[in-house]
Length: 204
Image: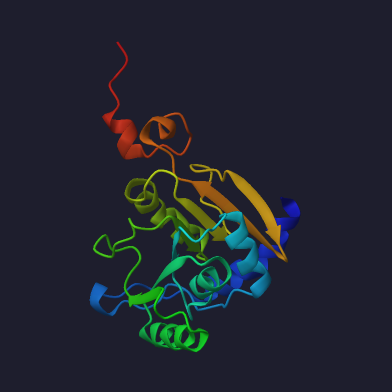
């Protein structure tokens, strides 16, 4: 893992240098600049998630839509992309049209941290965010996604509170997999949410 961390350190610096401070919700800017994911990493992420034609693949921070478009073309899945930047949504819709998959994908402008933006229908979630953004999103993933949903992150984990179930290398990138557990399973894992711990009965 030392090698992996050394490789991603320059990427962290690039993304951090581009992070923008949050404005009011109605005109909040992107948290990071858009860095397109290369084809080798996309292929690795989709395979790590074991995507099939029965899946609904969500990309949170979808950019130009390439990941969900690949999920449809390669595996016959359906896809949903969410991005806060309207220019990226326009580009994603155009790319879907060019790829001939517009009937199986949907792109929407929205803030992935906003509970009003629905993610519960996902069976697979793709991420390429900074570590602190992964941590900020983690409660939504753990509480709103159904049991069995797979979450894959490019380059960055979720911190020690939620260790990955599997880590692979895709080209020069580490990719991380988590599977959403049932509440019973989650109670036995280190990633148990603090809110859930607070509701546990006190020992007698």
